Length: 140
Image 1 (cartoon, rainbow, N blue to C red):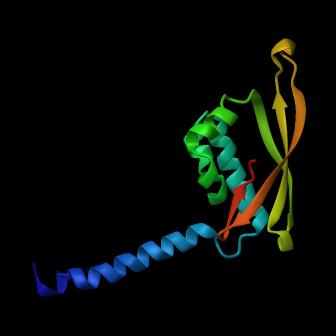
Image 2: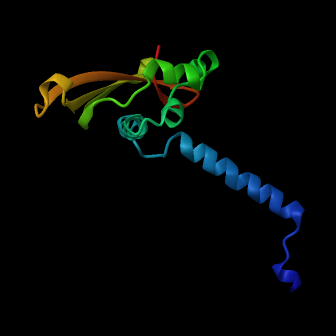
């Protein structure tokens, strides 16, 4: 291999560290995206996991402070089961920047077991909090 093609491990390590650091920082929040956009995207990903009953993935959207108290198994027992949701849509996201808190209003179309064939709209508020520079779904 020509000398120009060789990269020493001492040169590669700082480059690798720089690339990993950029990727991690980039995950926190993409510049130019509003908090509302970030929360909508994260809420959609959370609900994608919930509707697939992938509780380990849904758990990743809870804040670090929650995860210090409750492990994934506790989360699974408290929020287990696939919600009976036919359709979900985000209605609005309102942020109180000073509080580091946002409320996402959402609409679910559900089909209650006793009312087969009937779709019932259900509205729900979902609170998102900022912790460690990232938005997380608030769970008690």
